[in-house]
Image 1 (cartoon, rainbow, N blue to C red):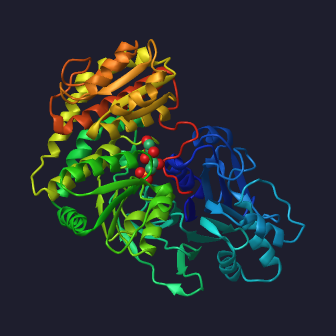
Image 2: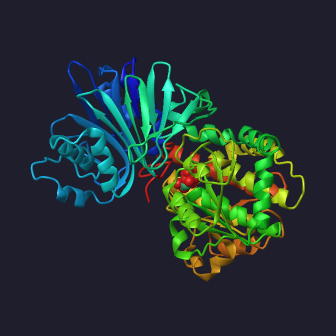
Image 3: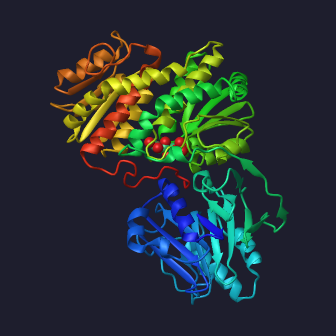
Amino acid sequence: MAYTGDEDAAGVILDGLKKLEYRGYDSAGIATVSDNPGLTVKKGEGKIDELDTTYDFGSMTGTSGIGHTRWATHGGVSQANAHPHTSCDDRLVLVHNGIIENHKAIAERLEDDHSYTSDTDSEIIAHYLEEQLHHGVPIQDAIEQFMETADGTFAIVLLDTETDTLYALKRKSPLVLGEADHGIVLGSDLYAIAPYTDEALFFEDDEYAIIQDETFTLYDADGREQDPSFRPFDWDVEGAEKGSYDHYMLKEINEQPQAIKRLAHSLGSTQEKAREQLAQKIEDASRVIFTAAGSSYHASLMGVYHLQAAGIEAQALIASEFKNYERVDEDTLVIAVSQSGETMDVIEAIEYSKDRGGEVASIVNVPHSTIQRKSSVSLEICAGQEVCVASTKTFTNQVVTMLSLAATLRDEDHDIAAIGDEIAAVIEHNIDRVQTLASELEDADDIYVLGRGSTYPIAREIALKLKEIPYIHAEGMMGGELKHGTLALIEDGTPVISLIPTPDDPIESNVEEVEARGAHSIRVTPHGGQFDLEANEDHFALYATTIGFLLSYYIAKAKDLPIDKPRNLAKSVTVT
Ligand code: F6R
C-alpha cells in the first residue's frame, strides 16, 4: 500500500493495510517521509492493530509513504524481516510482494560494503538500486536495469526520500493504482483503494510508474510511455465491515443467502451472455480441465461432477501440479476457478495452457483480477468481499455457478436463487444443534468426513475447514475408500461425519462400518439424524457445506482461536 498526496500518508496507508491484512498478517510496517524528521520507518512482528497500539502509526508525519503486511516466504517472522526495507544510506525505502529468485546472485554482484539488516530477498532491491545511484545511473534507468536483472515475481513500491517520488513496478504480483481526490493510492488489490476511487489502473507485467506531485506516468520495461487505461469498478466498501458479528466468518456464512440471490440475478441478466458463451465453449472443447487450489479446487470437483452429469467429460487438477500432468492443445478449455483471481499457482497453470494454445476461461470473485484479465470469458460469482481467510460464501457461490452452468448445458431452468432461502433455513434451524455438536468435538484430535458423488468434494471442503479454523486434523474422503485403509484408524469414539443425501445412499454401508467399530457417528442427512435439513437432493451438498462451515466456526470459537486469521495462512497466495 502506498500514498502520495495532500493527506497524512500514514492514515491512508494504515487503513489500506487493515483491508489488505487478509493477504498476510505475521508482521507489518509503514514508512513515511516529511521535511522533519525526514524518513520514519516503524515495523514489527504481529497483526496491524497490535502494532498500531505499540507504534501509533497515526503519529507518523508526511504526505508520502508506503506500507506492507507480510506473509513470510524468505526469512522468518521478525522485526528485521518485516517491510519496509531501506538502502544503507536511507535514501530508498521499499515494500515488495513476490519473490526475487536470484537475490543471492544479485547480492554477489554488488560491492562488499552493503550492510544487510534482514534475511529477506526483498532487501536486495534497495541495495541494488542504491549502488546504481552511487555510480551515477539515473534512477529510472536503474529501475529498468533491475527489472532486466531480477528473476521472479514482484509488486514493488519504492519511495525515493530525496525527491519525494514513488516508483511502482510489477511482474506477476498484482499492483493497482487509483486517483483519489487528494492524491494517488497504490495497493495490491481493489479493496485497498476502493474507499478513494471507483476506477483502477491495473499494472501489466513489466510496467512501472513514476508518481510525483499527485500525478503519475506509466512506462513499459524499455521506458516507453504507456497510455494508462482505468477500469471502472463497483465495490461495496460498507459490506466489508464486521457489523454486529463476532467474526467475519460467521457474518460471511450468514451472507450466503443474499450472495446466492445476487449471483442468480446476475447470471440471468448482466452475465447471461457470458454464461452462455462459457457453456458453448465447454460444449465445443475436446477437453475441459478445471484448475484451482484449496477450496476452489473442491468447487472444481463439484464442477466435474455436474458437467459429467450434463454429458460433458471434464477433469479438475490442482493448479500447482498442472504442469506435471497436463497435455494441453488448441482444443482444450481450461477453466480457472479462484476467489481472489490472484493465486499464483493458478496463474502459472493458465500461462502454461496458453503457451500450448489452450483457451482459458475463469470463474472468479474479484472483478478485473489477474486471472479474469487473462481469460477469454469469465464469470463473476458476485459473493462480495470475503474478509475471513477461510472461504465460505465464495465456495458456495462457486458451486452454485457450477450448478447454473450444468443447467445451461442441459438446456434446463434451475432455480438457483431458491438455494438462498434454503440455506437461510438450514442456518436458522441448526445453529443450536451445531453448537451442541461443536462442544462435543472441541477436544477431538482427528475427524473423518465421508461423502460420495456430489458430497465427496464437500467432505473434502469440510475437512479443510476443520483443519484451517479449529486446527483439527481432518480427512475428507470417498466413503468407498474407507475400507481400503483408513478404517484402521477408526476406534472407540473417533468422530466420523457422514453426508447422506437419501435414505438408500450407499454411504449408509460406510456408516455401519464405522459405527460397528465404535465411532462417534455424526449423520448429516434430511432423513433422521441430528440436523433439520430439507430433503432436496439436488441442493443437499450445499446444506451439508453450511453445517460443516458452522461446525468449524463453533469448535474454533469454543477453543478461542483466531478464527478470521488462522495461523500460517493467507487468503490470497500470490507466491508459488
Ligand atoms: C480455504 C481457502 C483456500 C483458498 C485457496 C485458493 O478456505 O480459502 O484454500 O481456497 O487459497 O484461493 P483462491 O480461490 O483465491 O484462488
